[in-house]
Image (cartoon, rainbow, N blue to C red; front, side, top):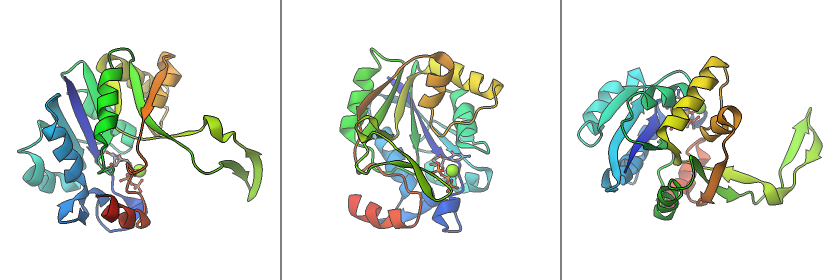
Length: 217
Ligand code: CTP
Ligand code: MG
């Protein structure tokens, strides 16, 4: 039994659509609806919290209030949006997911649920296929060892009390992370477990991603 937080309170600047990218239609369905639908259908998901921006609130309530438990107004950063949603979570376990990732793999969620019995913090990850280099002023300064590099995805799963504690510490220290597991690493000194992600679980970030999503979905 877990609560799910779906993040949709961004504005989608990099996608350049002129509106929030999670509202873009692929196969006659909003990108966001794919994730909402997934968690709505998962019997173990007892609470579905949708985080939205003030400008999108009316639309979101109209489209999603019937199939979500709570709709929360997000913050300026992704981290702030998560923190606000965590305040209303009532289950001991929580899955935090980017609404901009419409393809949620069943196998990944299954692995997260099993993993929660033994771990406080879990993320799906996939191996980096490309060699990754560190660049400064247009020159390569370092080449990283690809064998230890993973790209992480969402949903990420947590024991609710731990992720709340980590977020509180981050807030106190004015730290802004790009995912939630980094806060666990930095402030609780706990390890995050990795489960198998999926190359199809891409995040709609730029317009090019739409092409892939049309095929994947
Ligand atoms: N998000 C959020 N609240 C914010 C910022 C982002 O809930 N203040 C959500 C987005 O809606 C998205 C997810 O976090 O589902 C991942 O963020 P990102 O891909 O960066 O989306 P945007 O911030 O909307 O896009 P951009 O950074 O290009 O503006
Ligand atoms: Mg963003």
